[in-house]
Image 1 (cartoon, rainbow, N blue to C red):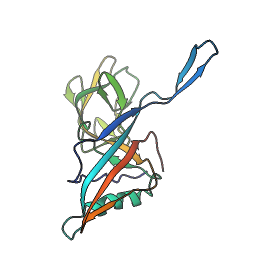
Image 2: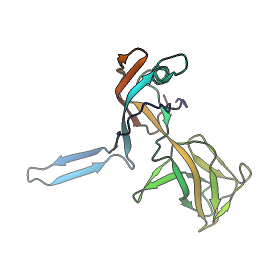
Image 3: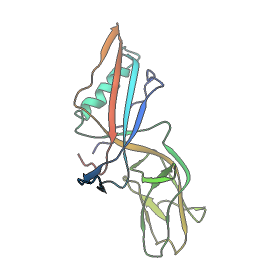
Amino acid sequence: MSNLVFPTLDGLKPTRTRAAVWKTAIKESASGKELRAAWMTSPRWRHSLSYEVLRETAEYTDLQQLIGLFNACRGSWDNFLYRDPEHDTVVDQPFGVGDGLTTQFQLVRAYGGFVEPVSALNGPAAIKKNGSVLAQPAACSISAEAVVSFAMAPAIGEALTWSGRYYWRCRFLRDELEIDRFLDDLFEARRVEFITCKGESA
């Protein structure tokens, strides 16, 4: 599992695709009735980016950064961390309620009323219990997988919230990355596709 971060490059086109992907098994009877089973509790997110300009000069290394990450991941084999500029921050996001016994809680984020787990943090996070910020690591600590461990189990009914920025753990969809050259030292990548990972341990 890699902690390499997807680069932020200037040549990214403003239009990009982000799709929620679920997996459902459907069996249909002769009468048309269906039996459906959902295999996932949260979606995977598929991204498609397009770069109209990637520079390759002594001063600008856009192309090298993108290809360097792709090759370091060996295409779709390993994963990386991606900061989605539109979905990377929460403020006072609820992530649990104390029951007097549980000491570990997964950090989550909510969007459109749907709650899903966060897989990695981008910088420090503020953890609150009933609105009061907790000292780290004395009162609690956060793992690389964004799991909060409390030194003492939060009491029954205590509200747990967090604020901070997060990454999405992703992998490239394919084992090839096509780059087009249109001028000296100027290139474009019409489609860079990747998808979020769940519990990957490459």
